[in-house]
Image (cartoon, rainbow, N blue to C red; front, side, top):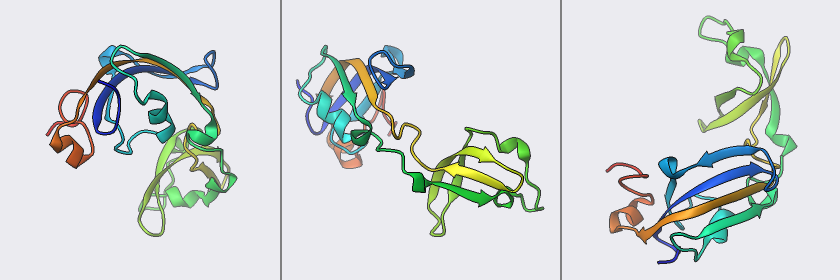
Length: 169
């Protein structure tokens, strides 16, 4: 069976930064395989395109340019906010929470939650980067397709895998 829309895919991969020789960013081995419903919008479209029509047992290796992965770095997604934005109800800012590189959850004026990384801290300001952590980076994937199976009607309706490697329902 080949990978196509509404198939459940389980695979291993090694993600490297920039090229086949780049720094290892993430690994999904057989004990921690990535299992997903193909075509449900959970994966990068360019990732899915590169594994389309493979079958169980197939090896893969491909490079996604930044523009087809998480996009280029957007300088407008880096903003400064007043340090007192991080104050508790007593007006106290816990400086230990303001560590460089630390992810923080923020909320916009409409109540949408967004994750940012702290990239600078001064006496009265905190600079936050809302770009995806892998924005501006080319991504090199190598791996192996372990399983390709038909999705159940329930998995298709819910848009995700149920059972091992997916959500429990």
